[in-house]
Image (cartoon, rainbow, N blue to C red; front, side, top):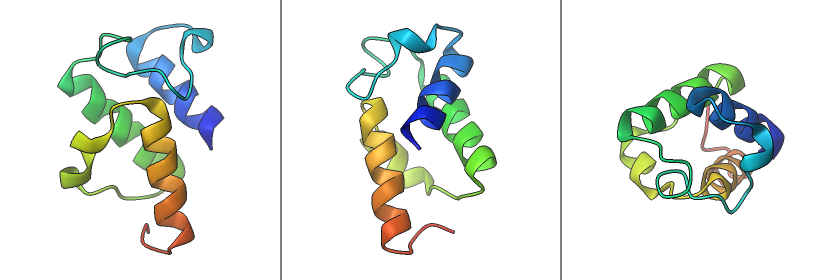
Length: 80
């Protein structure tokens, strides 16, 4: 799961995957804009066939935040 998220983040931001890790801050370190974040989430939703509510997106500060969110929601059966 983490590898998939890293790949998608790197693709959207046109950066090398080696510069993206679990603790990487999306806005501060990768220079993403709010539109980039929406594109990342949309790509994740499409790739993983899941739905992430818009109101949850502001809580994603790092790549690890996205991964943990998805893993926790999947484990609880909350993401479809």
